[in-house]
Image (cartoon, rainbow, N blue to C red; front, side):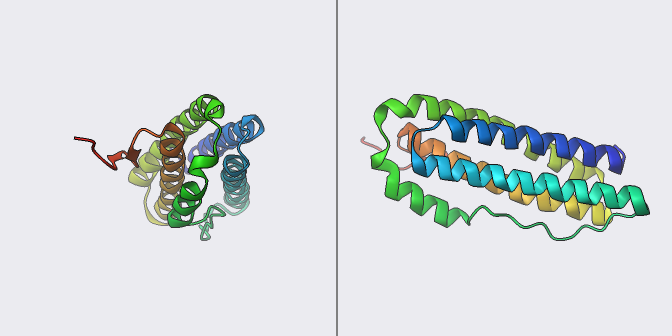
Length: 167
């Protein structure tokens, strides 16, 4: 895939996941969950803005300058702590819709992450570094959504690992 095509595709992926988070934030009743979804949506918007800027620069100069991408999403440890604090306050009747929304977000994040992984493998040099940076952030988003999904599900699993065993 050519660089310009990859940047346009990346913008499309970011727009898709941003919209998933914004729609989910409107639908959830839990204020903590809403705050997290809005933060993730804002992060995806900043990715779109960054990619559009880099695409415009590429079109004007024929060069890509991959500036370091920042994330507004807090570190994983902060997300885990917040989830623990509020795990018992979520009303039982809200869990079904919010689990469904988080599951959808997780699927789209995985799809986006897979795209960045492919681009990081196909590209070289500064372009490869750009996509590796996105991959790192998207993988962090996947972990964040999985943490939230595990808390909403209350299955006894944390990040796919069984926390306790009654046997």
